[in-house]
Amino acid sequence: MFKQWALLVLLVQLVDKSVAVVRFENLKYELNKDYMHGNIFIKSQNDKYSFGADVEMVKKVEGSVIITPHLEHLIKGEYHTMVNIDLDTCKVDPVMSENPIVRTIAKESTKFINFSLMCPYNPGRYLLNDFTLDSESPLLKLIPNGKYKMHLKANHFPTPESTPIMLFMYSIDFELFAVAS
Image 1 (cartoon, rainbow, N blue to C red):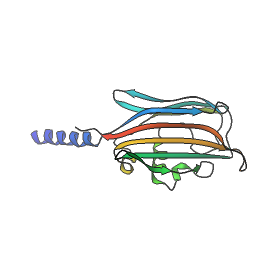
Image 2 (image 1 turned 45 degrees about the vertical axis):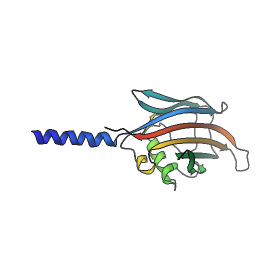
Image 3 (image 1 turned 90 degrees about the vertical axis):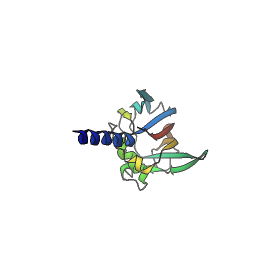
Image 4 (image 1 turned 180 degrees about the vertical axis):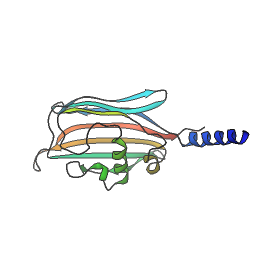
């Protein structure tokens, strides 16, 4: 009986050490009101942070939609770029991106969304429900504990020659850390 109890305590300690926490803060965003309206938000409940969106798309978006994620990691007081690419979601599914961080974030986000990451984007309600990271997230194998800044913008090009139309942009800071047992 004692051995089983000791093994259970050891397993709980191992599980507790692997639990990761993400804390989101400093969210700023802008939506192009000609294309969409709604909210992007951070939730915090019992020290569990999540990131969400509830947006109504009012126009069909097709042609090219260039998504530009820019991820920076704070190291020794300076932010260093980890990701800064342009991705045409009308040509490449972000889940198939060559960049492993973009690919993993896209795969993780599909658990929390009600829409395709590829265009065309039809009118309707687009939801991101409580995106968070836990100990099972493959992202934790790619990005270390620490502080980060994430900027994301989406520009629409109805035709190849057209001037880009900003659909949305947001920036958010977040911190990843393991919870000590």
